[in-house]
Length: 309
Image: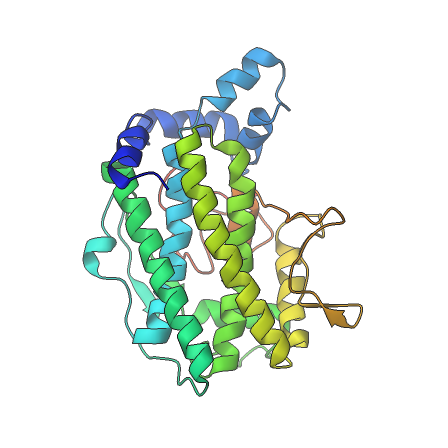
C-alpha cells in the first residue's frame, strides 16, 4: 500500500471542487453516477466524449462516495462493539456534518468468537475512515446524518422479517446484529467493485482494491456465520429485498442456493458483481426510485455523488 502522505498529494491534485460537482451534474444527472460510468467505459457518443467524461469527475469524488459508506459501517460496528460511535475528529469535513441516530448500546454478545469477529471488523472500518480522510485531506467530506435505528426496522419490514408496526432492534442480540451486518458488507463489496472502472489513477485504485479485499473478507465471514447459525432464510429474504431495490438485474445472491451453502456470490466465471454508485444508494436509501436521501442517510450523502438511480 502506498504511504498516506504520497496518496494525499496525489488525491489533492484532483480534489473535489465545485467544478467537479458541475461536471458530475452534466454527465451523471439524476441517475447517480450511472451515466458517468457509461461514459468512462465507452458507452458515450464518440472518443472525444468518452475522454471528456472520463476526466470529468475526480478520483477524489469517487473516494468521497466510498467515505460516506465507510462512515456508515464504522458507526454501525463501533456502536455494536463499544456502545458509541466514531470520535468527533473523524467526522468533520466538507459538507454538513450530521448526527447519528440509533445505536448507543452494545450488542449483548453470547459467543466469544462472534464478538471477536465484530471487534476486528469495527477496528477495520475505523481505520478505513481514518485512511480515506488522511488521503483526501481537505477534500474529505464530513460524516452525513446517519440512521442506524429506524432504518433497520424499515429494512426488516421490507424483507418480511417483521410485520409493519413492529420494531427491529439490530443491537438486541447476535442474530439481529449479523443480519444487519449482512446488509452492509455485501453492499460494500459490490460498491467498490462497481467503482473500480471509474478510478483512473493507479494509486487510488490500489487503495480501493485494498479496502475491497478487506470488505470481501468481512462479507464472507458474516455470510458463513449466518449460515452456520441456521439463518439462511432470513439472510436470503434480505438479499431478495436488496435485489428489488437496485434495478432490473437480479445479481444479488443469498447465502443458500439450491439447498446448499452459497458463501461466495459469484457468477458463472467465479467473478463478483458490482453496483454503480446510484444502485448502491438505492439500497442504502431503501428505495427503488430516484432519490437524494432516505433510509440510512436521512439527509443524503455528502459530496457530488448523492443521487440514486
